[in-house]
Image 1 (cartoon, one colour):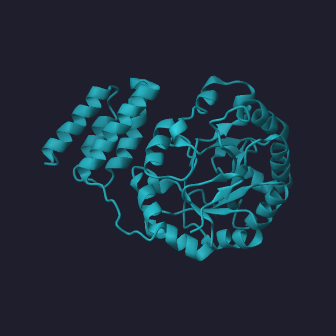
Image 2: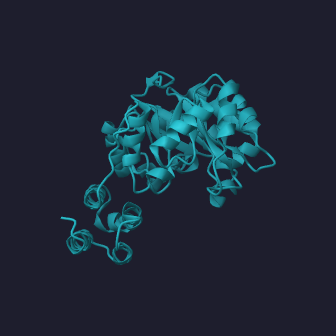
Image 3: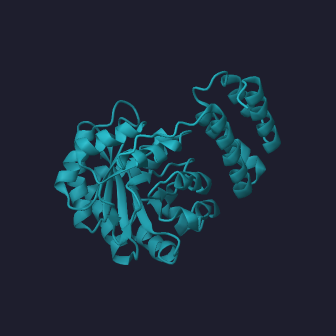
Length: 328
C-alpha cells in the first residue's frame, strides 16, 4: 500500500488513530504511537474555547514530540473564529503537523450549536470554513465527515467535493449517518463512492475491530488509509496488528491476560504523571474496564476499581487479581 501523503506530511504507514473525546489524550496517544500508528489525533477541541482562552481547552493541545506527526482536531461553525484560532494558536506551534476539522460528531450537545455533524446540513458553510482556514493555515487541513445527516440525506460525495474545491488536503469518511450514531453497520459503499469522486486522499472509518476488517475496507472502497476508533478501546494492539496485515504479515500479537494487566498499570502510571493521581485514577476506571473486557472473573475487579481514587489501591486490586487467577 502506497504511503499516505497529507500535504507535505508523509506518514510511515496508513493506520490512523481517530480523534475521540475522553480517550485520545496525550497519554493514550503515546501508547498508540508506540503500537505503530502512522498518525494520531487529539481529542476534539473547541475553536471557541481557544478563542476565549479557556484553560481546559488549551490543556487538550498538549503534544508529546515523540507522537508526531500529530493532528489537532478542532470543531466549530464560525469560519472567522476558526480561521483566527488556526492563525493565532495553531500556526505558531511547530509540534502540530496537521489540522483536522470535525464535521462528523453526532453528540447532541455538539450539533445543537450547529457544530460537528450539523455542518453536513450546511455544505456551503462547511466549504467556507475550509476556505477561510486554508487561506491562513501553514499546515495541511483535513476533515472528518459522515455518510450524511440521515438516511434521507446521504450527501458525503457532494459534501466531500465542496470541501476539496475549497482546498481540503484529505477527507475521512465514517460510513454512518448522524441519525445512526454508532448503531447498525458502517456503509463501506459510501466511502468507496467518495474515493471515486475526489482526487484528494480518502481515509475510511467505521467498524474496524480486527486487522482483517481493515483489509476488507480497503478492498471494498480503495481508500488510501484506515482510521481506527472504538476498536482500539482496551485494545491498542489492534494498531500494531493492522499495520502488520497491511504489510502482508499475519503473525499477530495477541496479549495474554497478564500483559493486559501490565498495560493497565503502565497506562495508569503514565496518566498519574501527566494528570495527577486523583484525576488519573478516575479516568482509569473506564480504561481498565475496556482492557479487562472478556477476561475471566473480571466483573468484580472492575466494580472495585470504580470505587477507588488512589494508584496504590488500583495496583493492589490488579495484583490480587493476578494472584487469585494464577496469571503470574
